Structure formats: C-alpha cells, structure tokens
Length: 241
Ligand code: SF4
Image: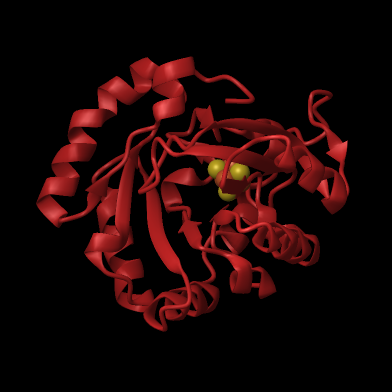
C-alpha cells in the first residue's frame, strides 16, 4: 500500500475523540482541497505533494500489521489522503485487522465504495463542500468532478440504516453558506442531524479559535454535534500525532 505515515496517538476528531488509536495514513488523494482559498488541506503532503520525501512509500499489509501489533491498542484509524483509492489493499488490511479484533475507523471523503465496509466499525465520512474548491489551480476541474458522488454516499448511508456499521458525517465548517449545502446533501442522501459533526476549519490554533464559537453556534442552531481538533490544540499542525 502507498503509505504516508503510521503512528500511535489519540483520535482528535469526532465521536471517538480522545480514544488511543493506531493511525495508518495512506498516501495520495482523488481531491485537492483548498479551504477559504488560502489554506491547503491539513495533510497536503498526501494530496498536493504526495512525493514528499517524508512520506513512507510502499508498505505491505503484513508490514503494517507487524507495526500495529507492537502497540497495545484496539482502535485503528485508517485515514489519508484518501484510503479508498486503494480499495483492494484497504479491504485486505481491514480483514487482517479485524482478525485481531481491532476496532476500525475509516476516514474518507465518501467518493469511493468498496468491500472494506464489511470490516469497518465506524465510517467517518467527510464530504467536501464547495468551500474546499481549489479555484484557479490546475486541479479545480478534477476536484469539482470528484467532490461529491451522491450514489456512493447513499450506499454508505444505507449501511447505517441496515445496522451494518456506524457512520458519522463530518464537515469542515468555513462559513454559513456551508450549512445550506449540508442541508441539500441531507435531503438527497438521507442522513440525520444527530449523525453530523461540524468541525471548525483551521490548521493552527489561532484559525480554530477564530471559528470555534461560530461553529458551535451553528451546531446549536441546527442540532448538529460539534467536534474540535484535539491533536492541533495539543501539538499544533505537526505530522505523526
Ligand atoms: S479529501 Fe482530505 S486528504 Fe484529500 S485533499 Fe481533501 S482534505 Fe486533503
């Protein structure tokens, strides 16, 4: 698998915030998010610059499992980049982890479906809103074409309805127009308010501070959950945490 980094930390976002977890960050992404027209995505070394020399490169599923076994931890978070673009390897990895009784969270932008869902405990789906568009870059068209796949999102949502796996819908909140887009998605895909987590946009503590109160107000107004980004509060915008 193409891997950017693996590390042991705590989950910083969403309903399992604070849970000690082994992170597997896959490399490469089918999107190129740019928030508020200035901030690149917080893991741009997996999307904008996947050739970054600090990325690990290729690791076999066996090698990843060996690293996991060194940590005495049940939770595994498979994140990216976008893990689902390596759907076959991802399924194999999840199958091996499940055999070790791991609790598996997959963090995805929700654009690609696959058999990995059979082994996943929590799907953390983060559809990207138009506020993520990299305007005036060579990736703008590609990003717009891939950003939302309603049919795939519906398939994910059905898993939750059928009780096959837990799902949280996590949105980066930049501005109040984002709420209209979330409501539109809810209408077309069918997920409920109590499954939604709004997260302030920001890759450092001062950005987060600026948007935190507004994000909480939006959660109160619309009955959504709030999630912070604990790893940024604790360590700042660093790799491997
Ligand atoms: S989908 Fe995630 S990893 Fe990919 S560019 Fe957007 S924020 Fe970055």
